[in-house]
Image (tube, rainbow, N blue to C red; front, side, top):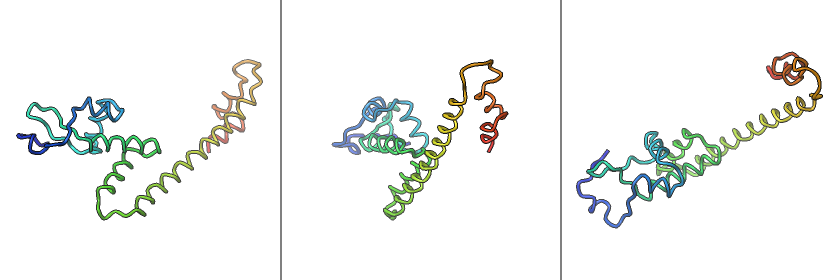
Length: 155
């Protein structure tokens, strides 16, 4: 953490922001900004003599990058890796593509899992006659592993 003695020199002509402004511009809350700082996902901001953090547009842009990457399913750990690759002048486009391809494979696997879950739930719902006591409920029997569907869920 760097305390700025003469901010006019370092930030001459650069717009600076307080944490609330950054949060608002990046469409997150202040706690998210603090969390990203703690996780080293954004550069450590300098501090004014008063202790307030000094943020710049770079911080806002990086938070927006993080949010967009999260929308694509990247975890914060994966995003940190992407940011490190982004900051390394020796990183090549194929390296970034490889990260995206790996995420794509993960997403496809999750979609397949969700389809399997959807089919199982559909089968369970269809097997329920909506009559009889709770003890004869095929959905509960499946969750207890007492019928074929339930035995398949153990796999």
